[in-house]
Length: 200
Image (cartoon, rainbow, N blue to C red; front, side, top):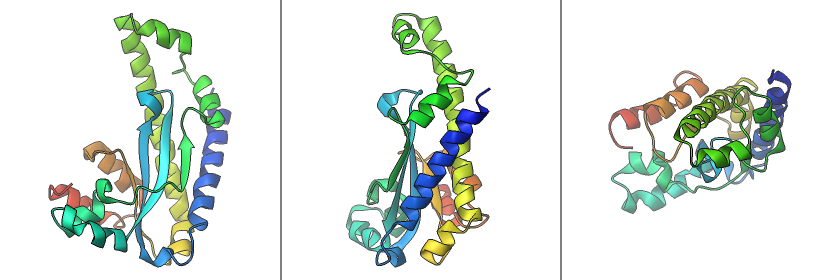
């Protein structure tokens, strides 16, 4: 069972996210209208999913207007964001993530990974295992964002309930659903409407 290792990862990740958000300078907070949790894989390796926390500001939106198709794209397309790094969760060097992965039914070793380079059947098997692990990682990420809202970390820090986008570099329906699930009802509607309008 991976329950203990998974919960250790989750608790450590939540502490990092909470501390990073509460540590944002007071002077910067009024201009922040959304947070970002960018999900990606270290070196495209499914054993090492990572979440990078950042934010964007209204000043950044204004500065990017000449480069975007309009205000909506400048505001919600991550390509135009500051892409700052407040905290990083997971990844190859996160011992909590490694311990969690090792205790799952999806685990495979570096030796197996090396052999898979020349074994199509094994490669497909390990790829499926990695995808399943990443599905769990995304579910934990959604629950972390939900907890930030339920414990009023977002509202207390920014004086308003601002959205948290959970996304990859490209927006698509599945990642859009991640964001909509992670945020309280209505909070990410502007982002959703911009996506549905084909502006992202």
